[in-house]
Image (cartoon, rainbow, N blue to C red; front, side, top):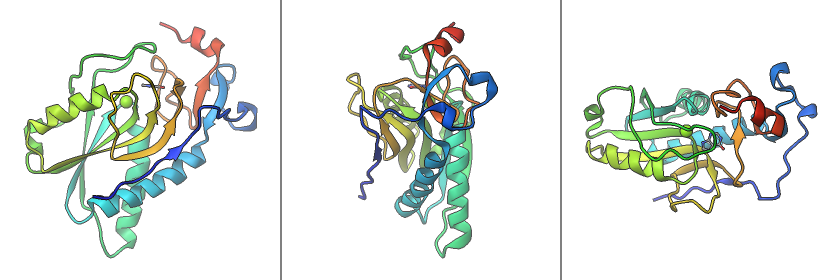
Length: 217
Ligand code: HPA
Ligand code: MG
């Protein structure tokens, strides 16, 4: 059993002035800081692809993308795995599927988990599964999803999450592969949203008070 570490972003990390980066005009006033620049996300994702390959290589895997927030990380992670597959002796055959779970409203944690869409979960019997998520916060949703999947008797289930938030509400759950461990702050961008906004932003950012007000529901 290999254990992989993650990139730690400390509680006093200030991030960067958005003025120093390219931000869509429609979000110019809505962001406080750029927290994780897009380039760093990509570099870290490239390494995660290598770690996943090392850990799960050999057998066919079913990669389950958790929509909507996971789609950017999923697409970029798979591109890096595909690049490794093209250029190495060993390769990792993959099939993919997309699921949605009950999601967020404002900053509240949703209690219930329901899988919407995707193929029939019974097709996962005997398979090696990699779940790809954008962020794990309390870990409760992921634990519920894992329990649900276990009921369908897969051979193995692993989880890759781009972000893991350090929060007092954590259930103690840790994904197998983590891009960045971040402080307890609400972040958006790179497909992570605030009431469906900011998914169309390259960098992971912290919203300004103005942005929070503007997109409040
Ligand atoms: N941002 C966006 N979505 C989320 C977050 C966050 O910080 N935490 C859980 N879902
Ligand atoms: Mg998510």
